[in-house]
Image (cartoon, rainbow, N blue to C red; front, side, top):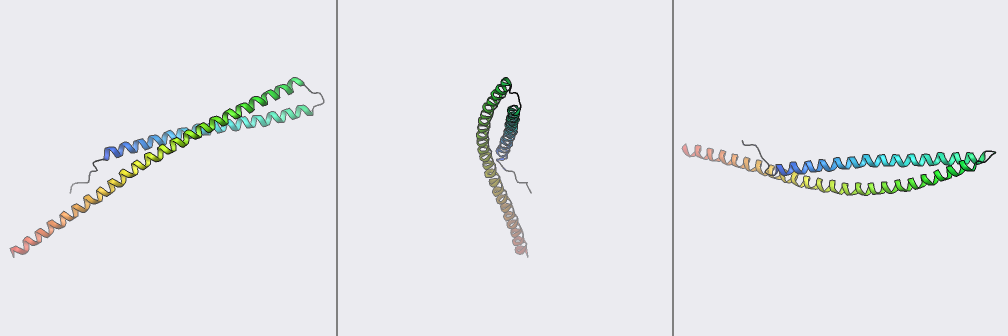
Length: 147
């Protein structure tokens, strides 16, 4: 018996490779997003420490205006950094959503071809079995006629 061969196997392989590529790209974006979130968390922790240090300065008996001004300026810088980092994260999330759509589309294309392959394979084996049954019937009929 000749083995079933899907005539669109090359296309299926290409689409599976495309899907895998899209998934790898999405994974890379996820790694970048996680790093960006970690950076934002670091900025937030720095802001918390700066606020605590500023409060400690206010509690001292002698107030050093330069230190207080430095901490306030640093706090403003951290706030700006935090807003910028939040924008970067939002942009990365949008990119991630676009990549997710690409992955979903590639997955659908692969699934369509897999279902087509499955149907053609079932049809191939059904036809093979039908031909085999017909051949057995012909042999049986020929034997019966010879008797």
